[in-house]
Image (cartoon, rainbow, N blue to C red; front, side, top):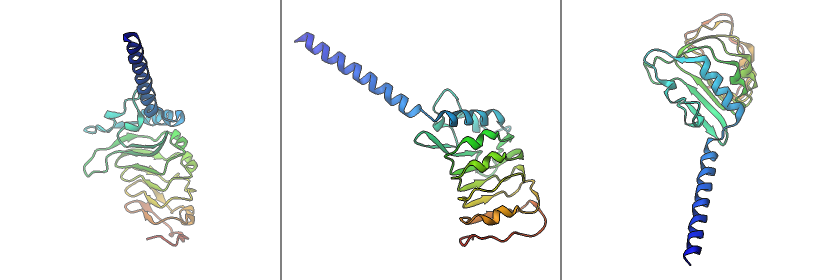
Length: 197
């Protein structure tokens, strides 16, 4: 009897250990491409003085628990890089081109900071992107806006110069376009969206 009891306890202990291991593995498995993209983004950006945005970005832990990273299932759906609150110093650096490999993205925000250069053309691969906010940085125009599902674009307070790309006007689902405090010239293209506010 005691032997049977011991076997049952041992079996239960093994089952619980296996269950806990599976549970641990279950929450920590992020798509490898997404993980590598986050790793590259982290290497290309840094906290400005008095910012601690990246304090939780320990690449040995679950990336879905990083500040600003939101996941669904095993994919990243929204990396919000920088604190939106007023007075935040934000981040500095250049966005790595691997951001275009986060194929499940529906939202991308980089506010505020000292992000410079042009956003990689790889962003045009993000077919599900609906919300793009890159405000209060030093981004220039070289952005391919062929993202047919975009609803919100905020590129305000940047170093954008020249005319507004005609491709913005062809985005049928746009509801909000914010292009204030940039150096625009030329005419505003016609917008085909019927829901633009």
